[in-house]
Length: 368
Image 1 (cartoon, one colour):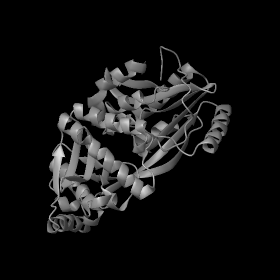
Image 2: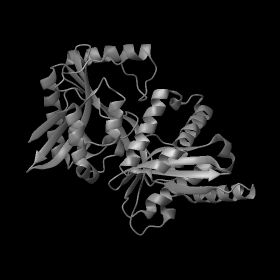
Image 3: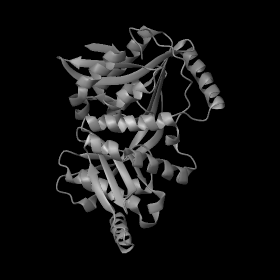
Image 4: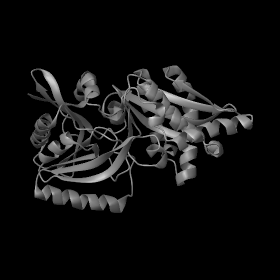
């Protein structure tokens, strides 16, 4: 049995699938409240949820965002492109059913459509899903370092000796300077809201120093970051690590959980505290927290590889971007428009080039 939901109904139904998504280890950005916050800040896209059921139980589901643009339906994942996602299905057979249902649902809306899913975790379910798409293309778009915990294994199994030594060094250097570093985990929504301005300021400062620009300099991006953190805090799925020294925020880590998965949403150090490796301390403390929690099986560092991530991981998940097109003319038209977008703009808020919001929705009945 296949069911689909649009607009507010899609988000309402998504809220009922928490247990299912936890069971298939879907990242937090793929479920509520993360998907709802993303939708609030991308009003030209309408949420669309396609669900496959067997004997009344959900066996596969996919949240999409769709809009009508330049004479075709454009569909994408419901959530930010720069975060990893999974094909949420009980297995390859169910993923095949889901893929066919997604194609059917898009064709019902318009015979000309495109589908783009960024940073999909590889595996049998995603491979089965890709095989259902017409004119499918898939390419490796990144990797996601993860620590997969085995009961009884010590912390040293998941953090390299060098990282542990550097963390001790950070403590010792700060203490010798008379400004000891104090790590503290915060989960209370009011306390998180109180420290959030400092978190955003460190986020900005570190990115300005490292890259020459900070995405949170944009008021809209800063507002969305704040909304994501507070929405997860209100649902009890936000864990904020703050490391203070001399009454300053030296480093922080924002983590979200979904079922037995903990995902690092942001992990940054203040430029003023780089000299004592406060960022290394934060990374080690994150692993320590996840390792000590019997309810967490996987710690995901998110899309993108770096030395500190690989030093706190046991495996790397390959991420693939998946494309599908309803017809050859649609594929050609999409390619031409994509090239034009790249010419007009080098990036957007999701790390890829997208058209400007045109405000067009499918219908009131199905607003993506």
